[in-house]
Amino acid sequence: MIIRNFFKWWESKLQISLGFLVFTHIAQIPHFLWGGDALLKSGTVYNVNPILDFFLYSIDLIEIPAIVVVCVSFVARWKKK
Image 1 (cartoon, rainbow, N blue to C red):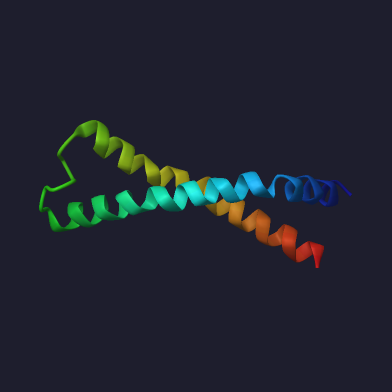
Image 2 (cartoon, rainbow, N blue to C red):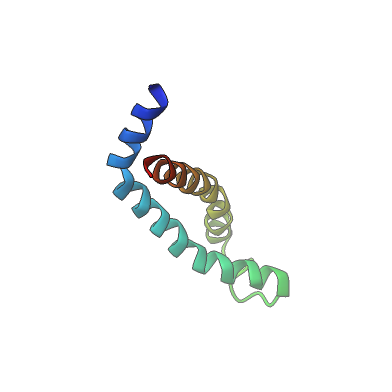
């Protein structure tokens, strides 16, 4: 019963969670370029500004709640059918 109520609540908040996923995926674009530059060591993006490096590194931490959102949304949709 508690799980069913949780999934009903989650379904009502799905628009917000999908917006969060859009934000995290858009944030992955500069993070992808930054990571590639760190790997290639060209210095175009990586090690230019420590605050920018910290911001782009912290995008990795945003992925954790995004993974949870995707999993819970999938289970909610699956339980609904």
